[in-house]
Amino acid sequence: MKVQGDSQPYDTINVTPMLDLAYVLLVVFILMTTASVQGLSISMPKPSNKPSTEVHEVKIVTVTPEGPLLVNGTSVSLAELEQQLAAGKARDPKMSVMIKGELRAQYQRVVAVIDLCNTLQVNMGLVTGRIGT
Image (cartoon, rainbow, N blue to C red):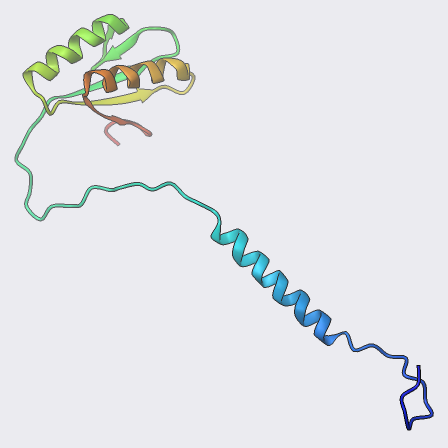
């Protein structure tokens, strides 16, 4: 291909516009993939300026790998746990249950305790570390 008025052949291609386009597409791709990542929405309780003087009953339920459930250190079955939680909720409607699954405990048993608390509409929390430390 010859350019008019030039005796030299035109044999180079300017790749700068093609690289600009590639970089723009790369930036758009990176922005779109990071923008589409969705997280979990959690509503955290807001702290109060006044100290709370309310004292409510708290039961610590430990799920052991050997079999029995422990409520504040006492061995119980799932049916006995249900009775204790129902009686505790009758005494104190704002009673809380802390559920602690030991290291080798079956996850199914922890979920059974969570389901029981949901059924009885008892406030609950999961203990992730050692109690008291």
